[in-house]
Image (cartoon, rainbow, N blue to C red; front, top):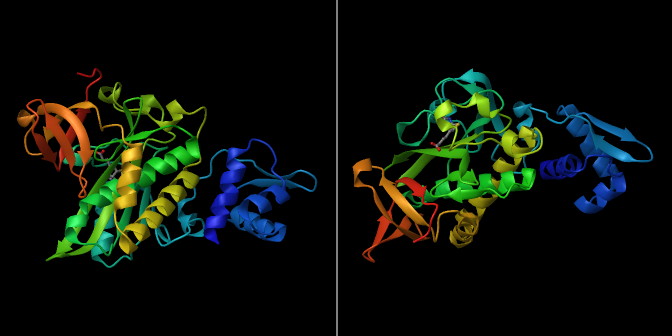
Length: 328
Ligand code: BTN
């Protein structure tokens, strides 16, 4: 039911003017009465939707941000419990504490801004107002060695959601940066708690530079980062995007839990911006061990396979990748 609400909202958001009840009913495969009921539910979730007898429905607001209403929007477990914070240090920290206290699978911690946002490799993550700063608690039924793949799964779900909502042809830079024209739009930080061979929980922290002005980002990111606001013609509906991210993670997680990782790795490969490119690898342990080569593939555990200039293939499990502009 909730997924239908999202479908209707997305159809309205994609259209500037009115969409008839009949059109909505046909595209969603439900009756006009059902459409009307979902429109009522969306209104009570904070959306301003105008309706006229002859023309149908029109979304009035360009952005609605009521993340606490996420449970009414999502289709599955991810996002069915929400902790909404105006400001915090880091949503990953809050989510880890909540998970230790027993917060259920799918709980989402979302903040309007973070004062101590954390990135990969101990970096800080600038998190001003307007972005999507979210951490998702997952209790996946997976083997410990499969867990690194959760990061790739989150990257696929985030990239697909941004593409769906904004139509921007963004891509994934290994392992999990979402980029457009070589600039970073979003990043993912996954943290794990395990006991013996079992995963207790993992926290997937996702930061999307959504309705953020470029001038709100630190000046040292000027040439490497971008925002949806800078790339799209207007502000995007963060609630819709967050719903799409949650639904994407939920769907992919069910697929890998009940089948295997083949489709997910295929989707990652299709969306990637790293394979077949000449790259410089900065291994996690030590930047001084940097080396160049061609990124040839990822393996079944999500590690990047890089062919060095002497022909040897090296398996990279953690670190940073810099994509060279020129081939050869
Ligand atoms: C990266 O370095 O690319 C990962 C960035 C992850 C940022 C997100 S924002 C929400 C969550 N809370 C944090 O402190 N970090 C993650």
